Length: 200
Figure 1 (cartoon, one colour):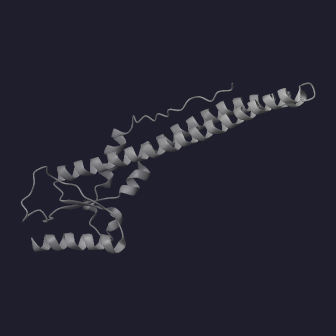
Figure 2 (cartoon, rainbow, N blue to C red):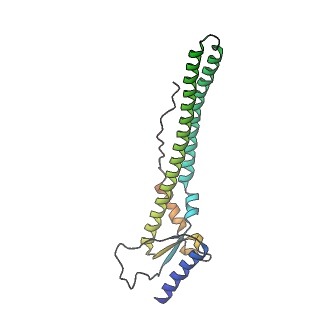
């Protein structure tokens, strides 16, 4: 269809001019004949970024990771207090120990401080990694739902909302995507695998 081909061309040209992404979903697993493969009759739009910001799972992820971050901080505070006490003990014994023994204990103390710093860095990285993975999983699920809705509605093309300046409201499937995404991610779990810091 000439008008359909023009619609697709205009939509894609707009994306290229404005530098905006396009979300494409196939409506059938069957291969279309070459003469029909570029025909676009039904188009939908989805505000992917808005969906990802609004989904309940995002708030839950932040709350879980904030709680984990506080837990780690509490653990490190205990270890830090022990190290501070050890440092005070070493300073008080400086005149009572031989130079060699004092240097030995100072080196052991410095090693424990270094270990604590490494533990802190690992746990911070673990939290960052967990957040990034959660975001990636939510995004993947959102794209899967968009493709699913496209099949149900027999849409030939789904554009990102940001790529369209003017559109009819009924073309926007964002609310349905958000509803399904909230339902499917309501029991999401965040796991962070890092060993507890050692005080000894």
